[in-house]
Image (cartoon, rainbow, N blue to C red; front, side, top):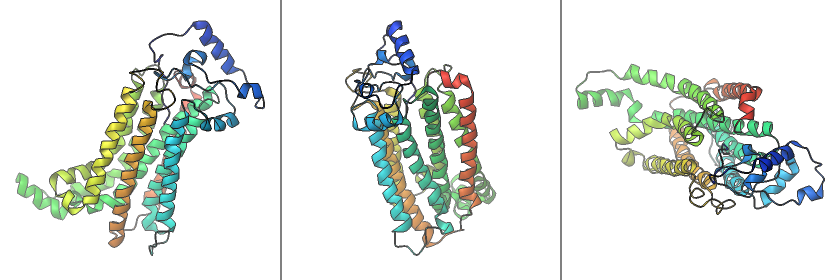
Length: 376
């Protein structure tokens, strides 16, 4: 996922003339077939416009603007974006292979178009889209200012889309198996532990009815917040985005509560182990995304290999890998005794409506010059 550009990472200000010259050079088109242009070396932070400078990254910048062909060619060159691309492109291929096996080569009696697999389609589309959009944004972020903004916004939207797709998979494959959401278990449990004579049936039914609508609203709100974080009003954009990206994870709270109130480790060890390991990877990923370590400690040393965003990509991949594992296990349990067949409107219909809403959000921000000209 691309990062918002902040003031100079090294704590120094570049010469105004050099910055202005770089800005002017970036605004001039160049012939795509110019061999001299293609052979230019990579640039330092004071040779590119301020809008393109990354915190504590001093070198390895591609010249601006690049053509699409030059952007694609740069993934095989040592730039400060190269490993940002590969650390999500390789996982994209791995997950694409994984989902192809699940849908088409698993050997189950359930065909790929069966309604029981609709939540898995939603989840798979979210995982693949967020990796694909991240790769696209990192490769083509130096085409132009407006396209740079568009790719960043689409990247944020894809993460929200993935978060909602995860909730859809949880809702059908994981939550029905929790004792926490079984009124026949919770009603006597509450009476025994708290002494309250409460029928939990209505409360649990209300929760089930609200899970997807609340997750939907949260996905749209998170995209709006991330897009707004690219403006001058936001002093800590990386912290804000990390918090916003974590918010949809709250939809998995019932699983955590299940492990506290009941013996989840004994009843479903696969879910227990992979669920908590996933959240460990997410905590590590959030640490690197916010702290900007190690490049903060030694600016310039990790420009090409080893900077925080590459580490952030690696640990987010590990977290999703664990999530895929326990979602697949939840699907197996679901297929043994499906409580109810998922509906098209309650799965794919929701996802299509979310795409429409996120598209409107992105269009609004791109049409607003305030959001396309500041800190992109």
